[in-house]
Image 1 (cartoon, rainbow, N blue to C red):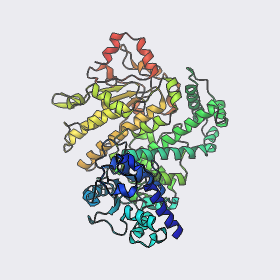
Image 2: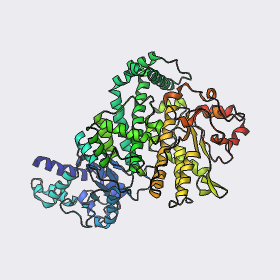
Image 3: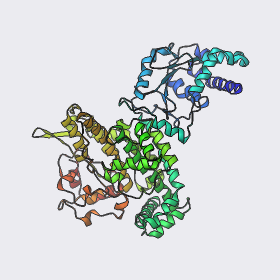
Image 4: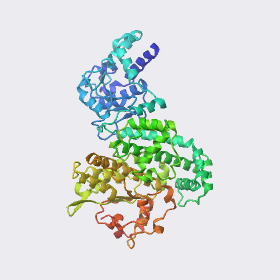
Length: 611
């Protein structure tokens, strides 16, 4: 034990010696002790990005970007600390870095305790690599047994390594290193943590960057589980041959996109069998792997949405806190039965997503994987989820070369915001118009929605409109109406279309939450189908006939990959064709087929869509 403790001290000293202090002091000092004796504004230049991350990884055992999240890429960082463990159930603390120009760390007490209140945590750690202070909500004095001086630790080790462990400051350091180190959990331990978790207060701050990182992990974990359980997919051959053929059809579609083929091959059960037996390096094998990623992604989104709905009380709590404990016991400690029950409850709100079979519903997470995923999600209050995290994750998992060859591009969030600003979708009068004194939404249509980034940003802006009084139930009801009946989209590829649908459902979540808070017993009478269609937008343009026949609408053989709700039927009413209304404020065309289609339309007619 003594050897391990000395090693921790030695690692820390080595980290403090690893920096070129001449560079950060403008050539004035060269050693750590000389540097620490000065007053440097280095919190954002040296402490947060360089020294402290080394300490976190080499001494505390976290992995940056994996088990430890950072706010460095977050836009508004005022109420987000520098470093937050990805798992705050087991690690109920946050770290915030300051510069060596901070003589007394306790001057930042109010800030660090704000973090604790927002995240419902036990400890806040302030550090400038000269000193480290641990704080709680109870007192603005540092917790003595965990707080220590890096300078004294360094000096004592260099002076006499054999005696360093006897020093009181070193004992504080070692207690800190033990209490704040990374602790991996067993599946049993994770389940226990989730069932015993504290209820949300509703005031928690949602760290989008950290959530995005953990959702990446969730998708990877589920996808890997799906890969090793291809035998269950193979069982579709006998259990549901029609679905098996559709799976083969989807894999063939992905293969055609990889090879940049304009036409897909005819598919049958032979295609399904060939995909399952294909080598990983072959085109069909690569296509199967991308399909299995979609399975993982689909499963993640359903779990994410169910948890978000539970957090706002839209459905009964079953996957978190006391709800999980109750139903886990009621279902004889079979966690997969709890998940099925949760999805049944969510299906009462949105049947298509939770209660209709599609190409991905053959997969159910194993008990171990499901507990792991629920544990990851338990670190976040999802009632405040309001950004396009789904599109961000999906984009990263698409092979970039194949994307460019296909002419498909997913627009980054920053560019989405820039374009909406440029077209003027920034003011209250752009979000609504008034007729007979009543607010009506201006219509938004994206004919090539991808993962829904443009529609998500439009919905977010409408929701944050200054003209909406969140104390007035009718105003909030207008918000719900605007998202359901004023936001339109179409996407020719089935899977991105699905992401758009879920993305917009997430945008509805805080609106529904507010309506429930204001009107006891309000449950929204379910959630009507959103105005998103899996179709080539150009096939919808038919001025002579605005109600489409089944034959005209069914332009893609792949429509059944993700079946629609009955509310979206074959016939589109006149009011559902957004470009026939002069209030349309924005159209964005990105898909290759749409761009080619423009060439066949007269310029004058196409510009008319934009007016």
